[in-house]
Length: 359
Image 1 (cartoon, one colour):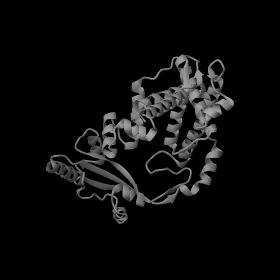
Image 2: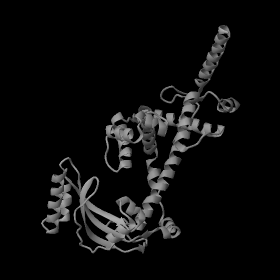
Image 3: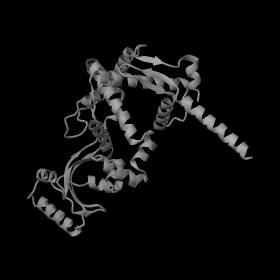
């Protein structure tokens, strides 16, 4: 019996070894600037990552080929960038990573702060969280991000003129407006000046400071501009203007009921509230302006007291779309020019490649 068990274990070990060897099979070698091989295992990992990011459980053989081609293109462009002397430091990659993270939170956060937030909300380490969400650990993701940024910079350098020329015509802007006119509506809006004193260990002291500033504000001893200027350098409070729409969504964002929001819209311009206490702070506000609901024309401002018109807004968005399309075309042009037999050796093609990708 023991001998049989040993035989079974040897067979299983041999099978595992064969699978491991199969995964190490080279699919392509990119050698524009240096020799880099893409193995079946690397392709499987990338397919798994794409599947996790896009919620796709399985890919066809043709889709796997497209992913393999994308991996080849990525290495080609990164090697071409290195050959051209383009470099990107780890600190630049970290900065870009944290900028994206900070946008999600609406404030600047450090990597340590992000890690703490992830731990509190998910119970996972940052590395575990990254693997669960993007399929890569933190260091692997940053390495991937670095390659993507280098490739993007190289393509922009090669095709900058074509990409920058991509812009919508006046006719396209007006046609977009006519097609989407119903969505360009301004709800009733209110401009509030809001002052917040976050709670501290010295609760009584914080409340006293808030009451003193409110008193000075009501007595016109301090203006909104002065409060905003002082708030920029103060650790005690924050103050600034806030535009609110008469919608249930804004009521939820403010943490009030819709009836309370309607009550707020009923206040007169110049109204100054009393000091209120929430779970996290003391606050007061002043009603500074009101704007009625209306359909927006092309020359109207997207938001009151700004300089961006509906025309400018549409132009900016269509320009981004067109430049994004131009960027895709530029990537295809650059990679097509680089993808030569001298630069890429495809180890598996045709039926042999199809067989390997049929998992």
